[in-house]
Structure formats: C-alpha cells, structure tokens
Length: 123
Image 1 (cartoon, rainbow, N blue to C red):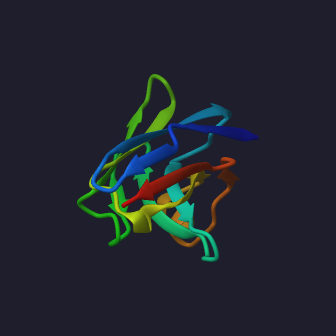
Image 2: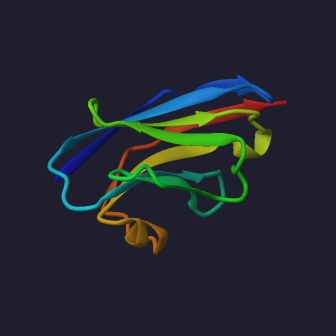
C-alpha cells in the first residue's frame, strides 16, 4: 500500500501563487505516474496535471497550462505543484494521486489518493 500526504493548501488572492506538496511512502512499482486532481463544490473531480516519475514527462489540463508547473524531487519521493496567476475558478480541493502508468492515470485508473487539501482563491 502507498500513502500520499499533501500539504501547502490555503487561501490566496487572485493573481497570487501557491505551492502544493505530496510526499509518498510505501512501496511503488514499475513505471508509475503521480499527479493532481481537483474538485470544486458541486462539481465532478477533474484532472489537473501529471508527471511520469522516471522521465519527468509532464502533461497538463488546458485550464491550467502555462500557469501551473508540476515537478518532483526523487531523493525526497515528493511531488510538487506550483500554482501561479491563480484565479477564483481554481478554488477547489486538490488531491494528490498515484497510478501504475501515465496511461492508467489518464484513463482515470488512479490507484492511490491523498485526502485532499483546500485551495481558496479570492478576488
């Protein structure tokens, strides 16, 4: 079993920045991917970004492309999401996720979830 622990959520004004972290523990297998999803009140959970751990290939949802940057620290087994130029529409609970491959994550085949961290962006 893999456990994911998130941190860095909070409140920020529109145009500001925030950095989320997700530390993974437990055994991981194969060519896995880690990423972020978010869920706003009354809406379905949506994909935000992912990173292929071995090659650092990254992929972003159109809504955040150019504003958010996903990265990882292999030594710390930690993933980050740097969020810039934040908009009120970015307000949501952000979930850390891990999957066996990039493909399984894109197919909504997430194997492990964090508990989520709230990001609130005010105008």
